[in-house]
Amino acid sequence: MAIAFILIGAGVNYFMYAFNVVIDRNMIQNALETNVHETLDLVSPQMVMWFTCLGIIPSIIVLLTKVAPSRGAIRFFLTKTASIVISALVVLIIAFFLFKDYAPFFRNNRGVEKTLVPSNAVAGLISNVSSYIDSQKPFVQIGLDAKKGPEAQQRKKKTLLVLVVGETARAENFSLGGYSRDTNPMLSKRDGVLFFQNVSSCGTATAVSVPCMFSDMNRKGYSGSRAKHTEGVLDILARAKVNVFWRENDGGCKGVCDRVPNEDMTLLKLPDLCKNRECKDDVLLYKLEDYINGQNDDGIIVMHQMGSHGPSYHDRYTSEYRKFTPTCDTNDIQNCDTKTLVNTYDNTIVYTDAMLDQVIAVLDKHRDKFATALIYLSDHGESLGENGLYLHGAPYAIAPSQQTHVPFILWTSPEYRETQNLDENCLQKEAKTGTFSQDNLFHSLLGIFDIQTNVYNPALDMFKTCRSAAK
Image 1: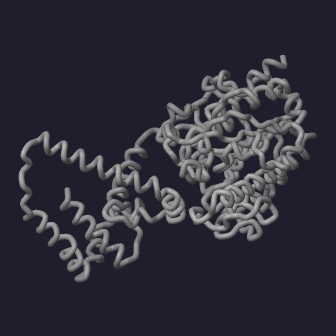
Image 2: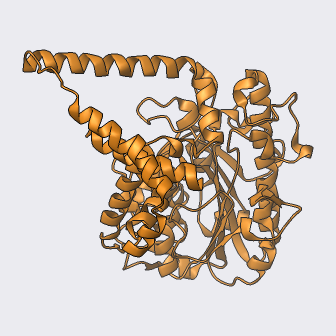
Image 3: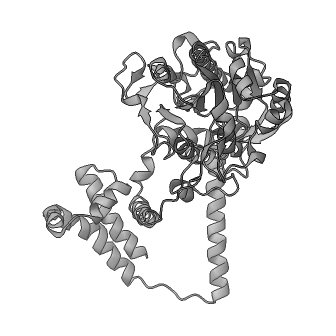
C-alpha cells in the first residue's frame, strides 16, 4: 500500500508541478479516458527522471527495508490502535482550538484539499467510481396519479405561490421571532405575515437540506442518492398542471429543478446587480411581473436566495442595508470580533426582509387575478462563534440550534385565505405553538394546490388542520 501511494504521489506531483493542473474528480476522469497515443505524448525525459527519483527509487528503498516482525498479534493491534486514537485526539484538539481560523480558511479556499498528494488522486478516483455506480441506478417517478382535486377546480381564483428558499438564515436573528434587534422592519408592518416559531431543517448544509425538503423523505430516512434518482414535489406539481418556475441565485438547485422550467439569474448580464457571476438577491425580482402577467393557471415560483451565505456576509447586502455597524467587511471572519460579525450577519437579514417585502408588493398587485401567498424557508442556519463554532455543516446529531432552527415565514392575501378556507386564528396558534420541520414542505405544497395523489400525507400538511378548523 505504501509503495502504491508513493508511485501515485510521484505521478500526481509531476503533473501538478509541470502543468499547474488541479487534481480532482474531473482530472481523474480525463486520465481514465485518455488513450494510449495521448498518454505517450505526455511522456518526456523530465517526467521519467521525476518519476524515477520521487517514485521508483523511494519505492525500492521501502521494499528493501526490513520490518521487524511483531512479537504478538494482540500487542500489534493494541499498539496500532493506541497510535491511531492518540493521533486522532491530537488532530481534534488542534482543530478545536483553531476552528475559528480553519473554518473560514477552508471556505475561502475551497480547492486547497485538491493540492494534498496523493489523497487528491485517491479521492478523485473514488468519486469517479461512486459516480459510475450511482449513474447505473434507475430514475424513479412518484405521484404518477397526481391530479387537481375538486376544491382546486372550483376555486374562484387561481393560486399563485412564491416560495423563497433562504440560505444560511437562522431563526434566532429574526425580530419576527422575538430577536431583540429590529431585523425585520418591513415585514413587521405587513398584514398577513406569520412567523412559525419552531421549524427545524433537514440538514446543516445546502446539499442536504434543499433536495431533502423537496423530497418525500423525512430527515431520518433521507438518502442523497435516492433524492438524486427520484422525483420531488415540483415534478408532481408540474404533472398535475401547476405551472412551476425556479429562479436560481445560489450556485445550483441540487437537482431539484432539473426537470422543471428554471433560470440561473447569475447568467444574466445585469451589471447593476451582479459581479463575477455573483448577484444580490434583488436579481430574483428581475422581470418577475412580466412572468406573472403571462400566467393564467395555478403556479409556484421558487426563488433560491444567496441570502446570508458566509463567510462573506458583507457582500450579501447593498450599502443602504448596512443598518448595524461596525461591520466585518472581509471573508476572514476570524479576524473580526463577535459583535462586528453579528452586526454584519444581521444586515443580511435586514436585506432579506426588504427583498421579501418587495416580492409581497408584487404579489399584492396581482390579487385581482390570483389568490397570492408567499412562503420563506431557509435551508439551514449558521454559527457565529457560539461555543467556538462558525459557519455551518456540523453533523446533525451534535449541531447547535443555530444551525438547525430555521425561519419559516408565511404571508397570505385575504383572497388566498378565502380560497384555501383557512382559519386565521388557527394559523396564528400553529405559528406560535406548532412544531414543524422541512419534512412538512412536500406535503404542504401538495395540500396548497389540492393535489390528489397517493404520496400525499395529510398528517404532514402543516396547513391541513387550519383548513379543517374553518369548515
